[in-house]
Length: 283
Image (cartoon, rainbow, N blue to C red; front, side, top):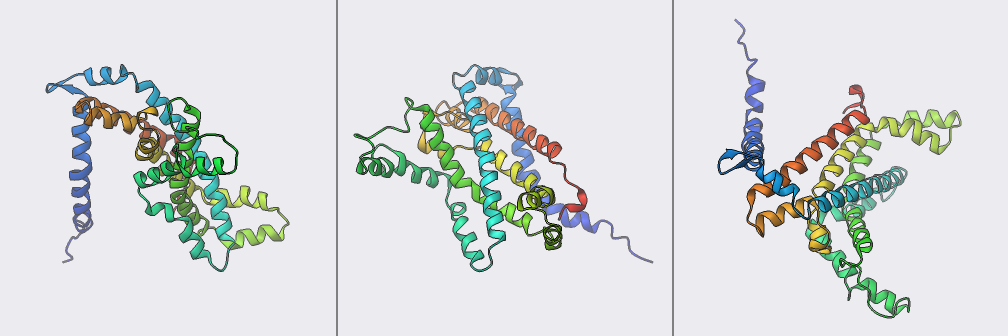
């Protein structure tokens, strides 16, 4: 008589399910309850206090504006970098290694690096002063120069986060069969047509994954912003941090966390609907 071992797959995934339940589901439920309760009773007081916060609207605007600017630029740069790497023969691993160096740098360290470049006595001002372009040190990271501050944070985020998008794009490009490109070249199609009609449709799974990951991370940006702008450029995660650590109000901080989660889930659903992937093309 053959033993029924249909339970074995469930036993194998039990450790991972328990891990996710303990370290993800339980804290998630606790955070939602903390945001939607007051003195142990269901309440919207924390949400009302968050919405009435003087920095709430600014933090939402700044977070969305930073995401809308940074993510498309990172995707375009990553596509160019990935396409160039795909055409390189010798030294490809070295180029990839150099381009992925920012991945090994923490968010805060990256922010401090750019702070040393862009602060009043930083390298950028010193270079401009040495070339005679400016007569005195300029302030790029103050509340009086909001456009310069935003551009500085955007550049720092683009430098820091493009590498992860590029790695995903390169992995997707490696899955494109060479026969397709060779057949297109034989029929006389140009480089742009090959890229638009062949490469992009075939790397949709990689594009979808890269956009979802990078957008979620962009909504959670904090360390780079905190290092460069501090409270001069409020973002959602920064306000959650301030409410928890400075105001000691964990309920409002949890409300901010729930808002970030809802926005991230909504963005993920948009990408899943907008960039439809054929299941047969999934790895």
